[in-house]
Length: 373
Image 1 (cartoon, helix red, strand yellow):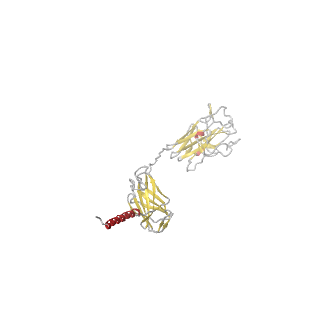
Image 2: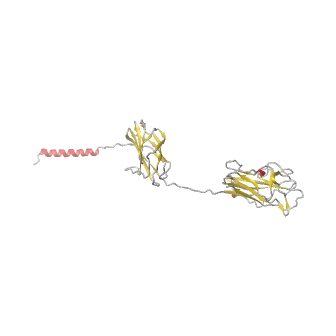
Image 3: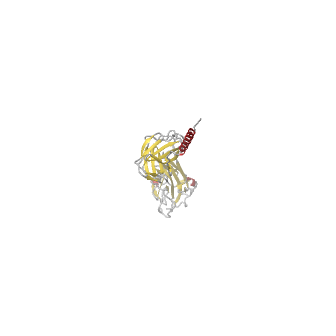
């Protein structure tokens, strides 16, 4: 038979044990860190498996932060934001990872211990407070190998070895978008009675027909008749282009008006002359009835040895002087390098003697632009 004392002892012992178990279940044994404030991670190259990548962290201490001796910062790269950390495949944060670009309120960091997916930064501790910023770049990182995959950097900042601020930032690899294009050898050339510009750029689609350009008046031994045509040219050929004009002089049946020749000469009414130039003519020609300046013009835009290289050739580049050799390729303009579009204005003159036979005089001129690749 049990004695009352023994039963009471057993009862008290069981009650005490139960109370102890209850106490153990409600007393916490963890330390909580303040969450970081605004934070970001920018990587210089998101290409999978890229090497030499810079990871720039921009961190703001949490609103409740208070450090007496901020002395270390730990970064752990994981495939998830929380829970068990699995290192991203291929990521390498080990030596020779270096630190650069330190700005913000807290600097003086140096790289300490590293592994494939962890980096510890150390500094001489000092007091820091809420909203202070930490900005730094880890260079020579190696990206994870997975394509279009997010990974996370878990960050913990210690105060004398005790985690005080913590947070996570995310970034991602991405499949690079590769664009390719080909600029072929190019020549844009056109002729017409006129060539205009579109948004200030010479535009061959605006060229008007040059099939029947008339001189401005009937031929006369006392006045010079003039006419105009235009052309535009550009090329990406490294050494530019040559523009030539070939054709007969003005003829009517067996009658002709003499070509001026290869040496530029002034207009002289009362003599047989047919010629052209590619510049703005500035004064009245010899004899009655000044025909210039009229619609003649210099090359536009003018050559500037930068983006525009085309200019009239020597014999066709003097105001009020004209040249032309019949049935010969006359070089009238050149560009010394690849050049943007320019418009040339060709000014033609016709002079006759008093005994020039009547008739309809005409010629067909062919301009050729040859790029010099």
